[in-house]
Amino acid sequence: MTTLTQDTTTEKGLARVAQTLARWTEKWFPDAYVFALVGVFIVALAALANGSSPQTIVDSFGNGFWDLTAFTLQMSMVVLTGYVVATSPPVARLINRLAAVPQSAATAVSFVAFLSMSVSFLNWGLSLVFGGLLARAIARRVDLRVDYRALGAAAFMGLGAVWALGMSSSAAQLQATEASLPPALLKVTGILDFGTTIFTWQSLTMCAIIIALTVAIAHFSAPRGDAIKTAFELGVDLDDSPVPAALRSRPGEWLEYSRILPILAGLMTLGWLVSQFLTKPLLSVVSNLNGYLLIFLMLGLLLHGTPRNFLQAVTKAVPATAGILVQFPLYAAMAAILTGAVGNGGLTVSQHLAEFFTSVGSGGGFAVVVAIYTVILGIFVPSGGGKWLVEAPYVMQAATDVQMNLGWTVQIYNVAEALPNLINPFFMLPLLAVLGLKARDLVGFTFLQFIFHLPVVLLLVWVLGLTFNFVAPVIP
Figure 1 (cartoon, one colour):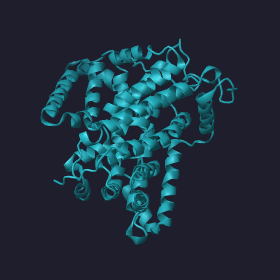
Figure 2 (cartoon, helix red, strand yellow):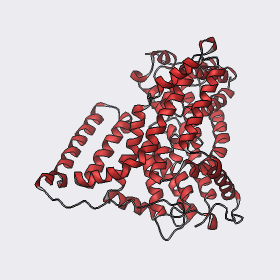
Figure 3 (cartoon, helix red, strand yellow):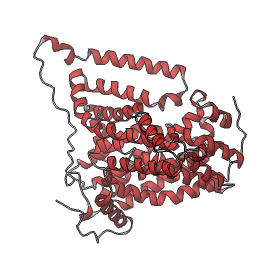
Figure 4 (spheres, helix red, strand yellow):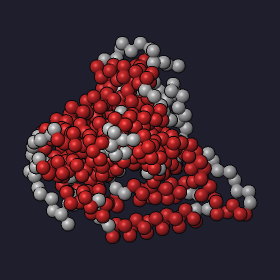
């Protein structure tokens, strides 16, 4: 079996840097659960330093522990529905056809990165599952030896690069929906539709540049020769084929082997989808995560044909959700301490951070300051929409004070929001469950992307921000 202590002197350039980072992270990077536990205690110490009492901190910890319960279920269902759909015969054939396209190891890695980011612009949840299953399919090819860690990192690029610049951006969706905005924030920003945020030419240009940069880094950093570690060498089982259903043995099992109920459930889902398109804006329908999960769950039922086949696929997928179920509550507690433990002066840690970063920014430098602040806070509170509600009242008021375009300020937050994902394994968990890997296996490659992305993002938000004019918000 190949080991990480092998000679990698044949590697050059980015590939050698990626190998160095991969060796370091595999040796020193903790399990994602340990990472989350450490984060909780760091945030608690920060709250103590801010003047919060121990009682306030532990109350915030306990009271906020289950704040992400709905999101935890959603992420678990992202993994489950992805497995169920992908292991159905029709989708498995489609993924296998796509997996046959790349003709070299480096091309395979960059191919996965490009497709995962393209899908992520439409829906980040779909990107996680699609990218992971495509990586597995490529790794199963016997005619192509590809590094499975690099494939996995490439599959994560949708979340690590452009997800918040696309139509499923939590911050952009919140700002475009009056009913979702807290009154205090609504008074500052008014309604900012997608035409002022994700569909501006500046935002689309920034997205295209980041995609091109990410694909290039993925291609040139892909391990070659003896440095490659395949899924087999990593001990990953790549068998996604469904277990054949047992034969019907009694009359009461007739419906379990019938296609009638799946077809009826599919028709009901189709009727609901048509109703949504007729009564709601197109973008709000296609980017809704709950709707996506409903469609994928029913699609999985239809593609497997019978309830028995469907339930067998579900049973195989359930163990992959374990890490999500036990780790996400820690992030909820972390966020609660940051935003709920009031200290000296009646301010929380997050409020002090926001005041500091926005006070030192003015003019063109404001964009850079907001981006840096978003990256730092995002390492500890990896929640795009939830963190925006915490950050937005202060940042958007500061943007108004320095005459920064509010729609562009949202996009500054969005592009910077993706950067912490390259370090913090929070959003990596569903993909890790699909891949059968640990966070330490991918972070060496994603951290290399972070090194390049950070200065490019800071430059883009500065330069492109100069092309905007300030537009006073229209308050409903």
